[in-house]
Every structure is written in structure tokens, then in C-alpha cells.
Amino acid sequence: MDDKNIKMIQPVSEFENEALSTDLLPDVLSIEYKKLAPSYKTYALVSTTITFGIIFLLALVILLFAGQLYSFYRIILFFAGFGVLYVARMIIRYYGYGKKGYAIRRHDVLYKSGIWWKRNIYIPKNRIQHVEIKKSPLEDIFGLARLKIFTAGGSGSDMVIPGLLPDVAQRLKENMMQKIADDQEE
Image (cartoon, rainbow, N blue to C red):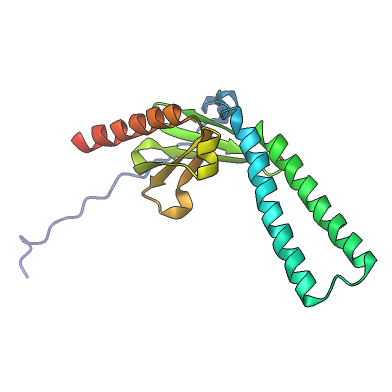
């Protein structure tokens, strides 16, 4: 082998990864989140009532046909247990409304929720692949829509912002789609 054909490998300069002071990082607690539409609270309570009503009727039919409701105490226990679950869920939905919000910034989309277990989702706009507006029949009755944001990271990193007025959902979708189009032009 010729010495002329051997190239000298230059040592790569040391990798630098400076530590950042946490004082210099943006304050995410100061982000102003927009509240969901006021009718979303009523929608959440009504949808919970409908869901629990269906579950209650199915459970009651199953128990009656299985012959398990032959005792007065079992009937009372069934109704009491179901009632406690229903009231707890209604309280969570009622107070959960005030803990939900979204923010659209220049480079990202944010959504927060949760009463006890807080959840903050941040999606960089350059990761968004497409956006959909969805409405169930019940949401349509309450004049609401959901914005579903699909990312490059798969379904586990997607985001849904519920409780939006349809015109707000449409404007948000157009904003995000414009960002996608601008990124593709670059």
C-alpha cells in the first residue's frame, strides 16, 4: 500500500456541550393559556351523564337477567356504588374544565390539563404533519369542535385540543397548515 494513498485523519475538536443556567430558560409558567369554550363544561357534564346512563342501564339489565338483584341490600349497594362513581366523575369533569387550556406560539402548540395529575403537552410546529377538525354529534349540538394534531412522532405524540368553537378550530388549523407549507417551501 502506498503511503500517498493513506490520508491522515484529523482529530475532531472536542465536543462542546455547555451547561445552561436555569435562570436563562424561558418561564413556561408565565405562558397565557386560552380557555376552552364555555359550552365545553356543559358538554362534558352531559356526555358524562349519557355515558354513565348507558353503563348503568347495561349493568342493571345484566344483573337482572343474571338474577343477582334479588336482595334489597344488593340493590342499595349497587345504586350507592354507581352513584358515588357518577358524582366523583362529575366533580372531576366540572373542575377539570378550568384546568384545561391551549396556547399557540410562533414555533409550538401547547395544551394543558389535569386536576391532580397535571399534563402539559408541547408540540413544535415543525413536527406537525397534518391537522384535522373533528366533531361528534353531541359536540355539534353544543357548537364545539376538536382539533387533532398529528405529528411525525406517531400516535403517542399526537395532540387533541377539545372544546373549541368551530371557527377558532378552523383558524388554528389554517395557521398550522400554513406553517407546514412554509416549511416545505424552504
